Length: 103
Image (cartoon, rainbow, N blue to C red; front, side):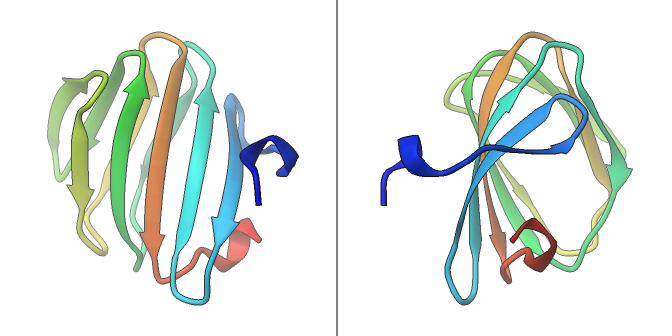
């Protein structure tokens, strides 16, 4: 498959993702609009977030940091987290198990 051929889905306002699913994980390539926010939430999935481009403010377990290109954040299962794009961003998220609601 090629990312160019995967349709983008707006999962929440300002978060446009191309999803790749295997049996046990989901890999999402996000284009995030400046100032778009994801409210604090938690889920059973383990998650790894990688900032490819831009500046992203992210709160994990009550601690807020600003992340930029090359930064990677490991988000354990059921830990509250949320964030805001300080600039337009490109992010990658990996989830395990697969995010069925993203299919």
